[in-house]
Amino acid sequence: MPKNAEPGIGGRGAYRLTNGRDLHRTRNVGAHEKPSAKILGLKRLEDLTERIRICIKCPLHQYRTKAVPGEGSPNAKVMVIGEAPGKQEDQKGRPFVGNAGRYLEHVLEGTNFDRADLFITNVVKCRPPSNRTPKMEEVETCTSLYLFHQIELLDPKVILLLGSLAVKKMLGIKSVEEARGRFIEHEGRKYLASYHPAVRFYRGDLAQKIKEDFALLQTELKKLEIDIAQHSDEPGKQRKSLIRPQPKRGLF
Ligand code: URA
Image (tube, rainbow, N blue to C red; front, side, top):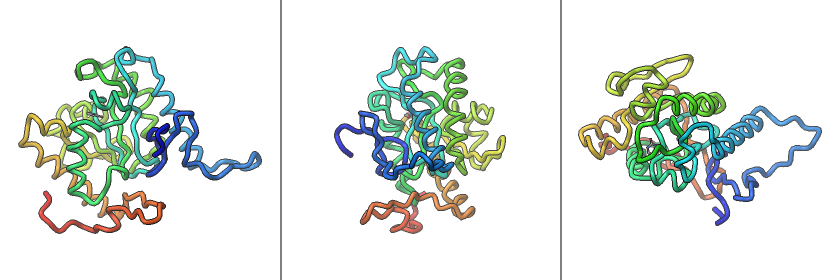
């Protein structure tokens, strides 16, 4: 990625230059040509991302360095929703890039999909001071303005909820324990709940359960014959899921 660029939506290799030009757009749409639904959807997602970056609709904007809209493929079959950005995320403007993110990547290592196959975001897009739990008004504002629209535009096959805030907000279920271990159909969408990856740092016993939940997700996608890999079009860059079928070792 060039120096003057930041990661963006649009799939592997997509990035946005800081001067606002998108590098993944290579085809000119003529004035007489109607943009396809796919291009329109992508444009709406990008507009939403821009609105999140400059949002001042709730008090959290006063404390942030960068808002964290979320990132991943606009074609992602799986959307991951965490709680809120932490310190590293706030500095980088990207979700799950701190300790919890490293653990999430470790868990993904045990599956046949990559981080780039997912669209990762949070219930709230700005870091609460001292990482406190987001307040109800912050959650309501951020989800009604942004998260629900992201879900609509991405239209994922499965939404993976990480942690009790996401589970409570999206499913109205109070605890992860109560919701996890099964797929839940709710308001026309399919959800899987799991613990927040950060739980591993103070409840080591739950680490195994997180891995089990990801294994369940992988099995279900296979059952539904959903190929979650966003196959790379970059020559020579084969995706993990293409070159490594099902792991045979005892990963979980
Ligand atoms: N925890 C979250 O819930 N989200 C992040 O992006 C990072 C840590």
